[in-house]
Structure formats: structure tokens, C-alpha cells
Length: 152
Figure (spheres, rainbow, N blue to C red):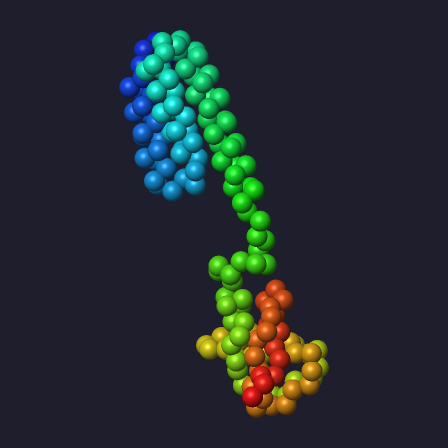
């Protein structure tokens, strides 16, 4: 095995890098991308400078760690939004602003079922509401819709 590793030339590194970058297209969430880029960099360095196989592998390992860490740091700094500000896959947040007509009277602070479209949701209102009043969704607390009477 060591013989095979010792016989690697810069073309092997370039091909390994391209294969790893191509594997990234399968959806590995960045794991192979930085390994592939590191292999490409080692191939380019090895094409210009004759370095030992030990130094090649140490450079590959070091570059892989550094590039992966740098990408993680960039992603970590750019991810400022919490789940409460995201709307993706949160159907209840997409309901804000929609209106519905109540089928029953509701007491202040009590929870009730509200039909919006083809689904019923748990809802809450901070005031007494009579049956047949049109309400508007103004907020969401978890999976409970907060509603108010719609102004005409």
C-alpha cells in the first residue's frame, strides 16, 4: 500500500480532487467539496514543486482541515436568523393575515378550533367574540394561531 502511495504524481491528485468535487454533486452537504479542493491544491503544488509523498499527504490533511474550518466559520457568521424568523416548512406562519368566520362564540383567552382552508387550527383570542364574526390571524405562538376581529 505504501508503494502505491509513494507512486502518486500530480495527475493522481488532480483526478482525486475532481472525483471528490463530482461526488459533492450527489448532495453530501459540503463534505467532499473541501476535500476535493484540497486535493486539487496539492496537485497544483506538486506539479510545481517536487515534494515527498509524506509532505503531500500532510499538506492534503492540513488543507482539508483548514478549508473545512474556514467554510464552517463563514457559514456560522452568516447564520444570524433563528427559527422564529424563518417561514420555510412552517405552514402556520404562512397563515398570518388570512381571515375566517367563527362558527361558535369564544370567551376571552380561551382556545378554540378555527377552520382555515381544509384544516382546523387551535386558535386563541384576547377578547370575547360572537359566532359569525370574521377574524384575522395576526400572530403564531408555536402551533396556536392568535386572532383578532377583522376591521371592516
